[in-house]
Amino acid sequence: MGRENNRLFTVGFGGAPGAPAPCQHCGYDLSGRDHVEPCAECGETPTCVSCGYNLASLASDAPCPECSLPVTASVAGDLAQVAGPDGLRSLHTGLTRVRLAILGQALLAIGYYVISVITTVRVSMLSQSGSAWTLYSALAYAALSTMLTLFLLWGYWGVARTPLVDADAGARAKGQTALRIGLVVAAILVAVAFLQTTTSTLLVSSDNAAAGVVKIAWSVVAGIASLGAWGTIYFSSLLVIEGAARRLPDRALMRRAKRILWLGPTVVVVGTVLDGGVIFVASPLLFMGSTSASTIIFGLLGFVGLFLGPLIALAMYWNTLNRLRKDVKRVVRAVATADAAAAAVQV
Image (cartoon, rainbow, N blue to C red; front, side, top):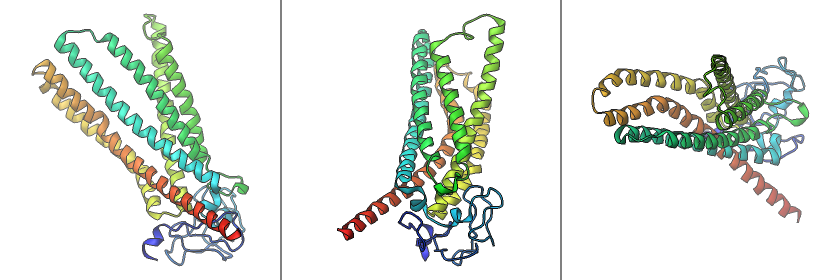
């Protein structure tokens, strides 16, 4: 089958008897079998789309031993059949929103950092007070960042609610439940953080020792909860992407989703540590020169240290989302073409 193995889109809805049941890995037709067997084309064995259990040798009408999802829900039906037209549109729209929000967040973060460096240089060179400008830019950044983050969560919700398992099976694809939980927690934390930043100076300007302790405690708790929520969103969304790739199927996308599941965090951690070390070594030398030049150079090093690793990981994640979006768009067009052809025949 050559390159066609990588992507085979079977168009049709309803899962009627005799409908193709494409292999999750290469798209080879597995329909008409009483038991789950390795694919004759690629040798891979189907796995449960809900929990990932290897379904080898199980009867086609048996439940998954791990999560009780019917085996037929995992081995029958491609993405178009399982998700349906509404699900396909929801998935495509959600992926588009996520991509736009990620791009907006990256540009906003870079822009805010550049403005911060420029403000610091103005203060040091011109002896001007930058407190008002710093306050306004911080409030504007908080407002824009919050809106983009909520738009991002909205997009992820479209991905989380797309049926990747037969609706009659009463189950969600692997990662979708965790993704929904992470989205709810993240939305709550984003709203609380925005309200605290923009509408109250409590625990910020107060000299009360108890207020300071509460502020620190809240920062620690919120930081841990935020890290957990966004970590959950990252990992579970990749599991959902892998599940969608199995339904397409798109073997290359499956491999990519599995790879950046661990490669993304590794790039962020290693890149941040290495860049932080460069900044630590270079900073004493920089401050021996002029104040303005040192500020600019240190600001550039800080940008590299803070953003280079995360930006590389973000680019890998963004490209993975974009590949799935293109795949889904292709399926949507194929379904529309097939429906139009069927309507023309009926007329």
